[in-house]
Image (tube, rainbow, N blue to C red; front, side, top):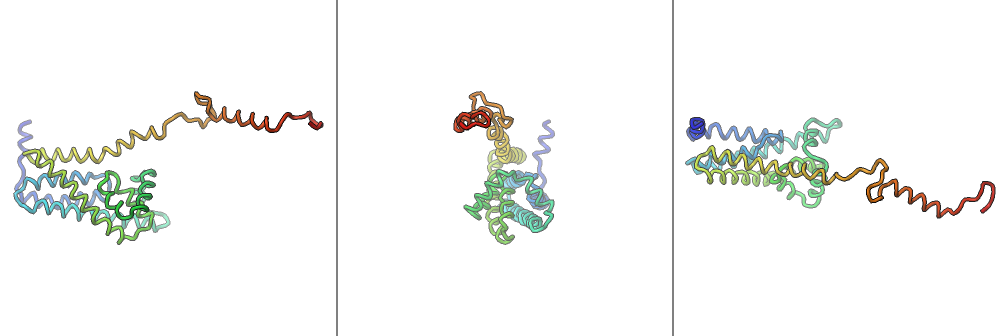
Length: 250
């Protein structure tokens, strides 16, 4: 066990880290923007931890620039692909993928916020876990041009890169060994990303809970549709008055 930890603690030279690390960050973040299953925040935080322990003062700047640019490139590419699906009669698999990652309630909320606040919602969407795709789909359905989306996505990607880089700096400053800071940053990022989705699933039964009275049965307080129907029938009977025998006037 001690041998494994010592191997993890031994990092390659800084030149090797930079030659491998920056292209890896670019590819992983771009891929994560196109396929929303890659934890891109954890990638940026881990790279920030490694850069924090390097001697080069520009390492943090390079991580920030690579992360922001690759996130912007992936967002614009995904929006362009979704835009083609919106304009096509048969849609596209990219547009279908966006819809799968945007629950109807979140999409409706994103559309409302987008109408009220405009580009500000797009900027904040990257900082909210699982908020990027619903807002992007809302922009597509609102027929935003690609240029308008790109202008709003620039500050969004910059703010996103700074946020997750600060998480990495925090992890790097708390631990002496880089691998410990990477582990802490990854765990923290995964928790922050998964907590809203878990909370959404936990609260879902409360919103849709309660006994179903659609079968016509009464509730325990006698307020079901069957009892209500009997009361309505009785009221109509009283309003009509007593029926006279057939063929006679009352």
